[in-house]
Length: 487
Ligand SMILES: Nc1ncnc2c1ncn2[C@@H]1O[C@H](COP(=O)(O)OP(=O)(O)OP(=O)(O)O)[C@@H](O)[C@H]1O
Ligand SMILES: [Mg+2]
View 1 (tube, protein in one colour):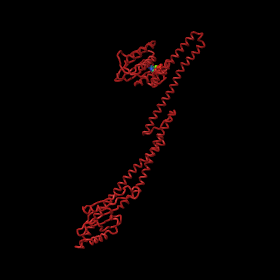
View 2: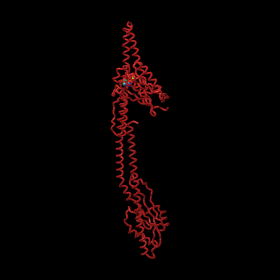
View 3: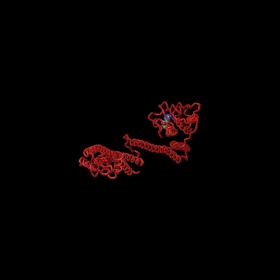
View 4: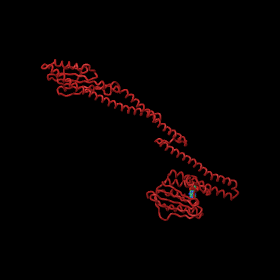
């Protein structure tokens, strides 16, 4: 997804989120308020019902007292109607209205036109015949109408049984259109809308601001990645922040650092390798010229030149094979896993070195006769051990080269010690770098500084480690630790 479309998408999500949240809260509030208002309306009707019932009963008694034996029929009813007229005149339509019907459900009296509810006959009959209080709430209005326009609450109707003069019965209707309650809802609608719209806008603005901030950080990361892609490895992302994007920036900085170090090491490696190859090539060319100029006449010069060319070409061949070994070990291409006796291999390595360095008169001490079985690649491990033994012999003028092996839990240790010139403390960190040779050993002309990097690459690939301890003038101890494998 492109950045701009991500922004649009986030805007849409934040607007939707704000509308849903604020809309949901407003709707719930409205429903709670309108429900509350309906209850208020019902209570109001109930109070009015109680009072009106008493008033009607009092008037009936009074008419019965006044008319005595004649307190029946239409004259008594019109007397009651007259009395109620006096009591209820002047009621506004925002107050409950009253209507009284006789036993035939004929209207006796109504406080106003609004008290005459159509279609309420079943309720009246139920109240009349079963002597029940029948409450009806006219639910034919949409309860959510008040959200968008003037509120409309259901009309409240109560039918109840009343006694009329001379033992007659009738029905009283109490009708209430909850206008006051509707006004309350109308009054809160505007502030609620303003509040909802403000809350939504604030929410969207805050979400956009925080998204913008996050996107800006991501944008920085993207630009850094593009620079790295373009080969610029000196970028450093701001990584001081303690949040997740700070963590990401720190991880990327680490990655860029590693890439830079690798690229620098590669450049150095190519330069060093070319330099090392150029030296024997220059030697060969020099001696070829000598051969061409004097080789035909001078036997001695010819032999010397041929020897030198042979020496230099061997040196070149060895360098090439070392470089190849290094590249191969880095890729860890051919690593077999077989069961073998490490001690036997070590003894072979030591014997080969003893033959090579016989002229130096060193003492070579190998591991005891017993076996040390492990699982790994015997040839590669032997290569690594041979490099250490070769160094020990090469950098020791007199004394001893010893090779010990031992087992510790699921690891094996191979220790190559010598009584040689030792390695200065400041060089110990660097001797595993390619082409590095310490100043002391530069007098020893045969090396390239590739042995230890090759040994480390082999041991790393086998899941082990190499450590070194050395004292100048006393000697060095190189220790290889390897997993013993499942024997
Ligand atoms: N046993 C040792 N005693 C003293 N110095 C050592 C010993 N082993 C390694 N070094 C130092 O570490 C350097 C690097 O060793 P490494 O085996 O990588 O290269 P090299 O022996 O110089 O050349 P190459 O092994 O490529 O022929 C050596 O030049 C030497 O200075
Ligand atoms: Mg070496």
